[in-house]
Image 1 (spheres, rainbow, N blue to C red):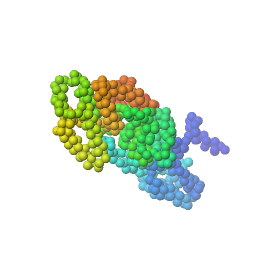
Image 2: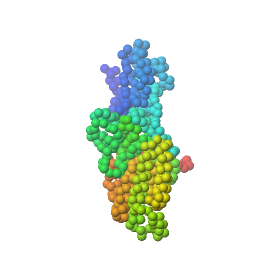
Image 3: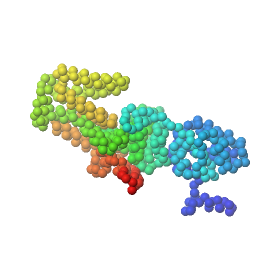
Image 4: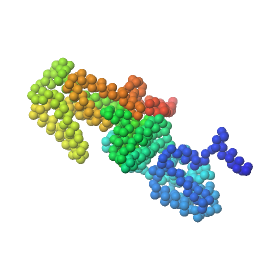
Length: 507
């Protein structure tokens, strides 16, 4: 009885709380990870057992079965007089047939090792574990829709388990969490909600899971099933989610407190909540000097306004508001349109429609042929239309500038929105002139400030007018100034330690 009392006192910490064993500590730390496996294997003919702990999708199943589990099971008939602690020492040198096996008693190191593709083997009594490197490296696809010049081009695949591993490789942390949901009465499609526990708000996780659980459909046939059935306002043309195929973009958003939604059989990831200024960011913004990145980000914003409003402004000036234009410009435009048989709005709509047709043709045709057809089609049709007198040269310039500006947009959501907005404002300009364009822009801005993405305003921080919150949205501030996360996204505001300072001479 005194021996049991002494053992109980020894297992208590100084504050009277029972001290966890090594196995319990690792299991408790990784308990929120849905892929964590802790398997008990009997050894010494059932006299003892060891626990094999690993992350399931980070390990080659065939290797762990052949080189660990089978070897442990085969050792049952050997050295029955060994204690479990002695067996642990013998296991490292004689039982396991894997190179680079080592022992470690550092609990945090063991957690980190498991998260980077190692297997840890321990028993209930030992204060150390045998660590075996059996991790596998997932081969990523190359990003086609979001290319970058100075950044890696790793893209997701259609296998959700591989996609989780690609994220784990960049985020080997116990704060990396996910929850799996199965959608589709017939397709039984796996969907995983991924977040960082130390960054994302629990309320946001609960809201996303609640909306996904409300989806009752036969087949998840596209990503639109998830986006349109979970958005706050699916009828709005403003983007309310970010769709990306890039691993680094997803990791950066997770670190800011956002949540990623992965769906099996699809190589794109949904990132929410969205702030619309995010859509003007590119991975290259963080691979070059901050001043260059800021200039290019502002350039993209200007390109968005040009692609959305340039054609409608031309129609309003030519059809209604002649007096606004400089006289010399008005005379040149009038001279160019002297032999054109159509009103200006018909010219603009016709050429804009043809440009959109050429864009679609370029997408549907094989890659090399599509680029050639788009270029030759634009040159031949534009030149022929001007020479035949059906459109004026100024219209070709205006429509071409509008189309080229849309190519500068890094997000397909913004590109599609600029197309719809362009037609909408052209029709308003036809009816009310410049006044109609202004009314249309005001209406779009009103919708922007009223929309929410999972409870977060998509116009933030523009809606509150605080320039300090735009350090990494409107422009890209130097890295040393990006110390805090947005309080709208994260409950943990600090993202950078005090040791990180502005570069300069050592003190």
